[in-house]
Length: 203
Image (cartoon, rainbow, N blue to C red; front, side, top):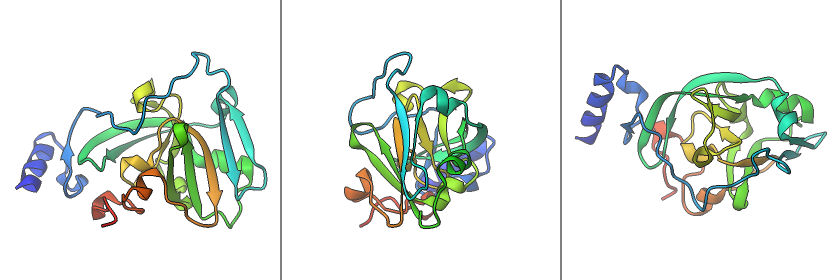
């Protein structure tokens, strides 16, 4: 019954219901969900930086100005939260991973990426997901800078995964040869997190 109602709502809104994963419902809102408090920064982002480390030839630290000098992309995509809401046609803009990869000299041994955010939060994905269209270090959503609640100033966007993998308040990417479960994965969330496979929890 839930699926038929969710599909009906998507169809009535003019969308192909096939875009909606099983167990999800469509919303035009953008619910705010995170562990811990919202990160706060100086208005000019003084002291803020972004680091890339691990399986790279040249570890890198960029301040806000340097980060924003890198090439940018904008991609419109759907996002799916493990708490069952989906939001279609969200446009994110920011720096593609390819621009960072060229600077650091990503090694062939880099098979996994660990996102490091404020308050010790981490999220893990295979590095190949950083190469997908739509993956980026996002600074804007729907034409505006990210709000504090949605990860200002920088958020990782990982298409093809439940949205907890798109870590807010991003401060670094660590490339590793081995996987390392992130914050939610250590609490029982599914390591792969494919919304179309309903990979919500390990159990």
